[in-house]
Amino acid sequence: MDVEALLAFGAALLSLRLAGALLRRRRLAWAGGLLAYAAAAGAMAWGAAHGWDEASFRVYYLGGALLTAPLLGAGSLLLWGRRWAAPVALLYVGLALGVMLAAPVRGGFDDELPAAQDHLGWAPRVVAIAANSVGTLAVVIVAVATFRRRPVPNALILAGVSVAAVGSALAGTGVAATAAFVAVAAVLLYLGVAGVPPLRARFGRARTSS
Image: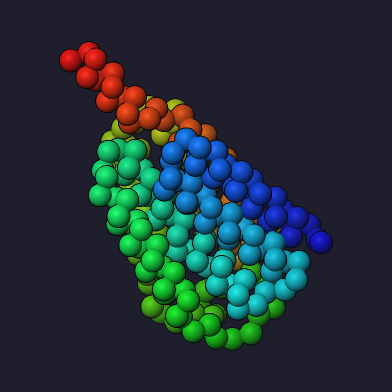
């Protein structure tokens, strides 16, 4: 296994471990986002070690392009007390799965990180762009709106989202660089979310003081 595969595998294990820690904290949507990140990194490890194929590309695009940012956005909205975000996120996950399973994948694969425009039509790419934009916007809005109450966790979350966005923009630089961005973003996001007090605890203090 070469260095690129090892780095991607390490990023996948790290994201998976942090997702499990968030699951224990009942941050379900955030955990789902990191699980999607882990799946994308795992697909990169497979592609780097054994060569890319249609199955690994579908997992990579589903996790990295279609699911991560929207689930992180839903997690932020849920931390903000917007419970309607949970059913919306579930519906979107079903849509994303359907889109990725149904979308035709064209062209052959080589050893390079696949570019979506080389293998997918416009529909799944439009869904990914729209979902990523909405998810990222939700994270930013919630972080900015609640920044004065929790400046350090929100700064870490914003940094994590920024690193993830830069990693996506620089995906063409290769698996090793993309995996490094995944690992750094996962750690920053985990530290930010883990530092946010549970809504129940805040509401409980509010009732006690009122």
